[in-house]
Length: 254
Image 1 (spheres, rainbow, N blue to C red):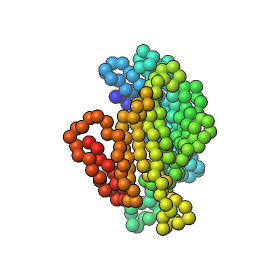
Image 2: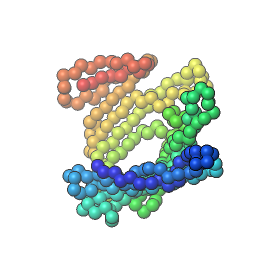
Image 3: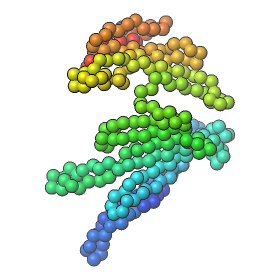
Image 4: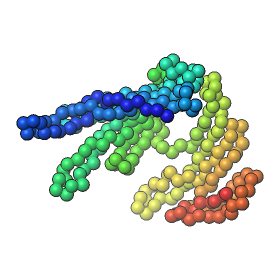
């Protein structure tokens, strides 16, 4: 793997003391990755990623948004010629989140830290395939995540089925399908109007391309017991059992 570094133009704000002793402020360029190359034999480039950057300044020392565009080229599919290889584009847009100073004498000081606002996935023709939108409580805690597909259908994080396909004409053959079922819970005392625990799985089942079930994990919680599940024909010497994790009872199968 190899990286080429360059400049992210006018992306940072800085202050310095000039020769006459006064403080000067300016927006400056900063270091950033421009290219990433992946090779499996040390000679032929199998994948190339090109990075470009922009910053929208709101005036003064605050920026409004930052954007990183990544063009990924699948050189291995074009006889390792990257210049004309099939490609797709991912655009990351960032919003500012403020991280305040730890200095007890200067509590108002702070820095803008970029957090992901949207991620847009595009095909080689520039058509948008999927957009992920995020809101944050702070730099470390995600509030909401919403996925919008090219059909304009909107999904809110709870995925029930994931289909994975191989390369080929169109989507290619189906390799694997993962189905997630979610547990149902009654309303809780702190929110008694309606059920509010919606994202806990009851089972995750994996099928191969022919529809044969190859793996399954079942989850049971305080008010239910673990049912018998498919374990396959192989026994690696482990012992089945129930592991208590908080209010979750998880069946263990080696």
